[in-house]
Length: 323
Figure: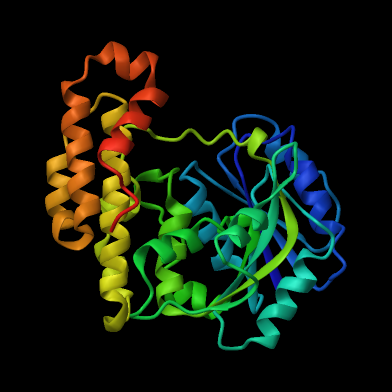
């Protein structure tokens, strides 16, 4: 059996579309667990009104999307777990083809399908294919460069990923501390990809409605991977720890640069030290540091009025592509 878990928070205008896409699947052997995460609109009433014996509705106080998905897992009975955000939709063969991929590759802990993005239905596989990432099995090993691992992460969304229940639980589930609403999914994916092979499906089987996503990006906060990396280190196989360290160093560089371009220079040194960026990322980190120092010296007017030009000049002077 498959368990489908949909977290719902104030999605009364969209959730019916998501549920219809589940009920229209070619594979009918599933249970659908809807977890209302303390909605204040009519979302709960709408999902309760849908009559289908495969549907169960669970309610909880607002705790964030990670906690809502994890709550659904505690109620799930399936061997496989599929997660659909309430503002996305699956194409009819998503469950069937994802399950088939896992059954044909029993060593894989999860699989990821390509997706269409936004109203223009951009195919996510096109960009990955241009970088040399095709369909099939992926295994992170001690020889995987952190930049390659980082690119693999670009393919991941909760709505495109089916987990074996055993692998999901072994990796601790979605990050849920402090009602986290930003990066809770990537935290799980990094941990799982370091511990299990996974399968990529090149065919787009999901429509990711980025135009309808309303989760506020907490721009002044760090992602859980940078705030609380120790649990991921603890479960990471010893031979892959340096791959994780490289990824975190690169993520720290990205975060410090993002904040610097926004005019915040308060914590870049502590992040560089915490993740040993200069040692791990070498010239890339040195050039990121030079960009940050240059940004601090540039008048805010230019950073705010011509960010593209400033970025172009600094990347020409201090390129970040070299490692």
